[in-house]
Image 1 (tube, rainbow, N blue to C red):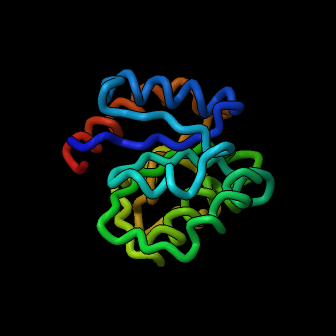
Image 2: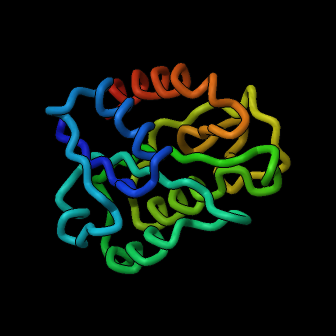
Length: 167
């Protein structure tokens, strides 16, 4: 397996905790953690395999740091690159745009020729709508720490096992 670039905000406590679990399962030697808030376009483009953490903010928005970073790679081709996405949302507080950030980032990647892996089932979630949903799958790992924290570790473990086969 090629080294994986794990891009997330080092300032986000919940996202960092999830990243630590992912790194532990994949093995530290297989993952380079990059703070997306400080990442350059060159750092981003240096990888072939990626895990991107994208929590959904407010009413289905990307966090500011992703909004500020994406224009730096907007014109680049992501062909030949493989991406797995995970992110948090609140299916009770924001049921009409649960984990939309995952869907927004998946659309961005696919529009530039990148491949998105690590799709997960929508079973076990209760929400009205999500830009991350395609059929009966999410375009990544959907985590709801607010309402289903007890399920997060198992969901992360299963997801990472599937990534090991897909990367």
